[in-house]
Length: 264
Image (cartoon, rainbow, N blue to C red; front, side, top):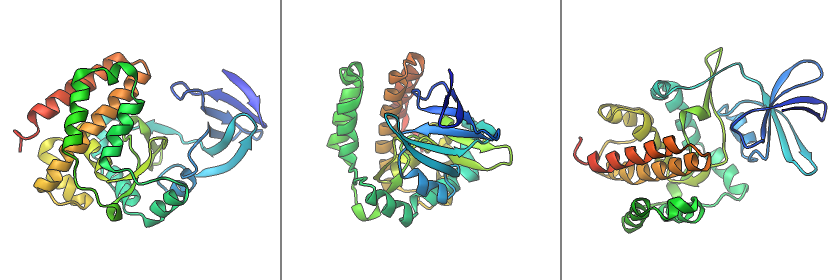
């Protein structure tokens, strides 16, 4: 669908709930436009974690409109997720006091581990909330909540799927789509990357490069937060009517639980 709005020629981008557009300014400059983008994105752009922001506008009935540079490039593939650039962006985001303070000023609240499960049980589609296997996992996770220290909580993305990463033609890598961001244990992000993209034999090296020790405490957290990552992806695919992808996540969640402590 094409239309004109605020001096921009707008073309909707599929898969973004009608909120994201490729647009063209009157001088021919292409830009990326998204409505209802979280305010934290401005701080993320300053940290060079997400693409630069060109302008923001408040539109009646549409909410805040954010214009960012249109980046020629591609989304990352699964095999790209072990790259040094991806890990460096996570380190920059997770260890930034500036981002954490900005998030708290924008009324993000600390999410304890049990809050993540409660949120899932409240917001997941009904058919998932009635799935006995998934409910049993939630109950088990709530019985075995890992230690959480508010003073070490960080700003995290919450959905590091490879399609939320872009690489420009010049080789720069950015992270996009911040609707799932929250303030919690960084292991929510770390466990997702490890369980979905990094071979088990490479976990120790990856964690060392990131800044974590490889020990039983860390492994227990990966087991706990890794399952949260699977639950969230199952919800995401179910909500987008991608039944095959949701079933694949459920299958891999089963295998993850069966094999985690038998593979060292």
